[in-house]
Length: 114
Length: 117
Image (spheres, each protein chain N blue to C red):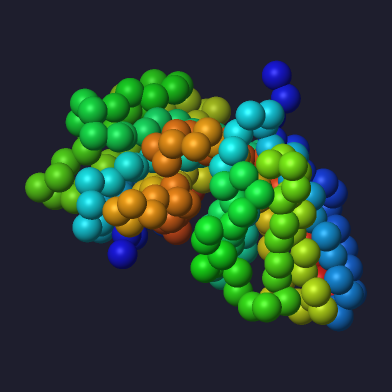
């Protein structure tokens, strides 16, 4: 069966440009999470979706970061006016609604801001 | 607030010898704890999870972990290391704040396991 997929796998952009990262969760998973993995900060939570709503956005590092989810499925993470410190691997995970359930992770999008 | 501390950033063992990766947690609630593994250029994979059932949890690939509330520990062990076990291991706690559980994961800093032939 299909797992969590993310696109693109790699993205190189210039400082100041906007980027969009996409996540396709496992079908039927109502919970969706974005995390960021960087050398200096390790793995950190960004945002949580339950269905199409985002009850927890506490991990978004600045107002340049936003995310949406449509149809209870695909999610897009948008970073506006990218900065070099945004360079990281952005990971998406999905799970069934129960908090103790396993989160299944996608392969990530490696973002490099020049 | 919940947190996890992985006590070793790097562990090196010889193939066939035991593995011990140490993790301490901090939580005001009864925590859900996990170990995830990340092989080079691969995604995160769940090894095992503890959710207040048996304190000794068995996972995939021969790994197991024991939840010790008195020591606030959740160490990962394996009796005999294999070359394929070389990877980054993350101890993780699930954020639980009463009725507003989001299930977001809080990761430790990771332990790199090196397995020498």
